[in-house]
Amino acid sequence: MSLKDWNRLVILSLLWGGSFFFVAIALRGLPTLSVVWGRVGLGAGFLALAMWASGTVFPRGLVVWRALAVMGLLNNAIPFTLFVLAQGRISGGMASILNATTPLWGVLLAHLLTEEKITLPKAAGLACGFAGVVVMMGGAALGDFWASLACVGAAFSYGLAGIWGRRFRGLGVSALATAFGQVASAAMILLPIWLMVDRPWNLAVPGPAVIGAVLAIAAASTALAYLIYFRLLASAGSSNLLLVTFLVPVSACLLGAMFLGDAISGRQLAGFLLIAAGLAALDGRVLKWR
Image (cartoon, rainbow, N blue to C red):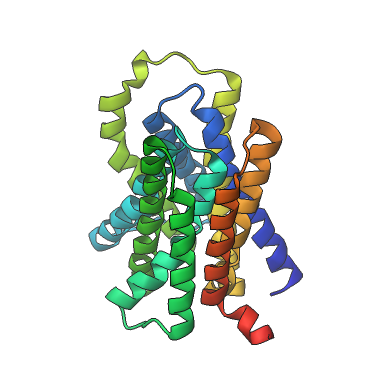
């Protein structure tokens, strides 16, 4: 990768790692679905402005919007909700480590649903990565266990979204239009649920820090992150994008430790090292260098 791509990779890891930090702040003044809908609703607005400014054509056609609706459900509505629910019980650092299992699920689902079969090194990587999940969740209190399971479910949903998202190249939808369409679809899916459950008109007006966190997660961790993601995908390729999964937990844990007083236990660190080893085996770069 070029130096510019490496810079984009680091920035992307900070933006996605920062999402766990911003969620922790937003939850101090807003319920779960209000945080999630603020992220996708405002994020869709920011992406719409980016499309208008760049002259990108908005998605058109029933077939395209059906595909975008499924993508929005799998890649935004379900995982965003599960992660925010989980962060009511566990730290953003731990949630980000479990989020790093997304490529593991992607490889397993590709084996089951596509012609991309698991090789022996990938099988070893999967075993190592999932062992890390077991280590992290083992011995946790019941509430923390369910919160951790929600994070694993969110990562699984991301893995399904990766398989589903392959169809957009054939549909002729641009990367920016896909990002906007999926986030806008997620906002529309969650809107009636959010109105029924949270009744936002009855909520107290949150403080400036909470409002700032929601704006940051929508503008930086969603809209801007997707713009960088798709540029990096075009210039560096999907295999190099796997590296971001190593960096997101690092940035999330550092932000949590510096500003929220979060601590990483030995069990969580051991789990992260096992997951990182599994990702390294899937990536294959270490074996090639050796």
